[in-house]
Amino acid sequence: MWSGPRNLSTAMMYAFAARGDCTVVDEPFYAAYLAETGLDHPMREEILACQPADPATVITGLLAPVETPIHYAKLMTHHMLEDFPLDWLGSVTNVFLIRHPARVIASYARKRERPTLADIGFAEQARLFDTLADRTGQAPTVIDSTAIRADPAASLSRLCRNAGIPTSDSMLRWPAGPKPYDGIWASHWYGAVHRSSRFEAAEGPLPELTGEYARLCARALPYYERLARYR
Image (tube, rainbow, N blue to C red; front, top):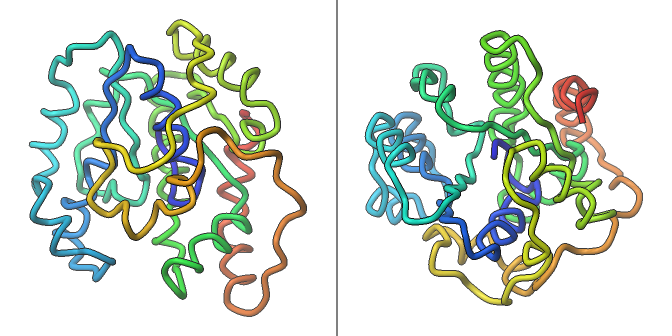
């Protein structure tokens, strides 16, 4: 599941974990991304200490057998730097989770100020989408967080059918609180979703952005709109 940050991605991971037939992994390329870029993210040293920093090692882990029928990976598009291998994508089912950039930027800025286009993953998401579409000759599945919150049961049912896995009503609820499969960074980023036990209600109007945040939204919007055509 490919998304940028603040895209409903953690709630989606919780929904898949709640199925009972699914092993989940949370942002396995995060340490590799930090090691390569040298960026100073919240809890940087803790992340580098708990994950492999070699992308090839991460890929080997993602493709290794698990004890459940389904292996779900929550993957951040901006973590996939241009020199990270992509040949393994043909061995997995790829789905793209999108959210309007105005909502993403407003949410991200509450946790880490002054995000850049590279921080929120829209350009990288479009690059990965185009790479897969070119290789397969068809558009990968795209699902919008707005549709999920508006009608979780119907949206998740369509998603499961597209992914070739059984539908499950158990995806609609999960226990509140931290999860054993959360990334170590959860204490900084996951406060709201830890208080949840289901998908939140439908979203209201788009947040109003000004200044540099409005300009950032204008840069990200064409990438979002390109993928949104395939929802």
